[in-house]
Image 1 (cartoon, rainbow, N blue to C red):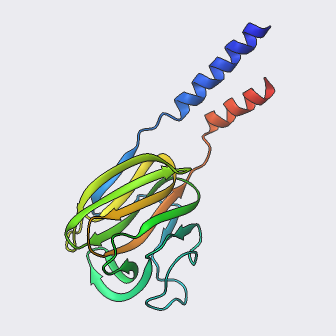
Image 2 (cartoon, rainbow, N blue to C red):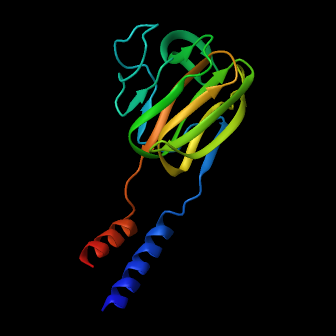
Image 3 (cartoon, rainbow, N blue to C red):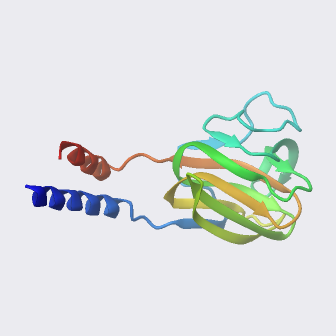
Length: 186
């Protein structure tokens, strides 16, 4: 009987591992956002005024330090109200209230190198560096194909603008739920 339990447990573990084998895909400088995000935050809603420090004012996400609301101005894919900070070395982190499978945003800086890092429970899941600037219309960055709960952004120099934060929340796959249920029964 013990060996039957071991075989069953091994099978459940193998099936579970296969269901989480998705490949991480950095979104590195595209001209469009996510195809069908669950959430889009364009920073236009609400009664916030320019210069307001943004932290928890938008549902589903918490912003770390150095995020200020700006109004006016226009650049490729960034207009109206957006987040930014002049002279900072980076906006730091975007924390998601729930695990997400994809997230991205339009982003611009003075010409520099920016590092984007996806984390899950504080551990690095994926990271990449990209050349960012003020004028490119291919300025959408982020991650897809992985589960994460935070994005860290580090800029080599200068300030930034960030607009149209988009993300999709993680939902358990039916196969994973079935394996979990079988494990409980076993």
